[in-house]
Length: 137
Image (cartoon, rainbow, N blue to C red):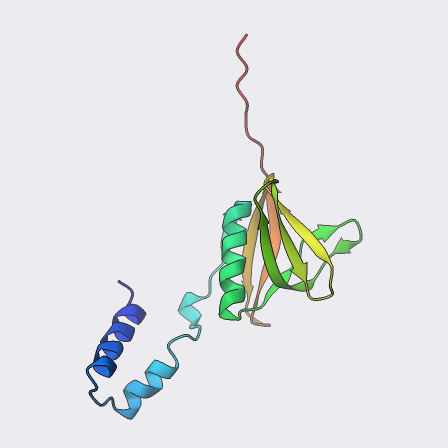
């Protein structure tokens, strides 16, 4: 179990038992859901579904994710505000801050990297995914 979870459970038990917690414990509890530098990492070679789930998790936590995929006009560079998985097709739909939409496709692998200087995550394409099909003669 992670140290954050242990700390949280310990304090929840104290609160449920109506025991007093000191100011230090209260301060730590109020910082429970914040990001620490040890939690900031890069995610590489993600499938469409993995990237979709990770982006949805970041957005739920209020973490900024910038779409740095390219389209025919060049690099998009807009903030992602929502993500929807289209179960009937091979893509997820990203809604961007400028009102446009773009797609995550099954045929690509994605990277989600933390940009330290600007404190946000960046979504990029790693590579196209090819699945070998065995043909019997």
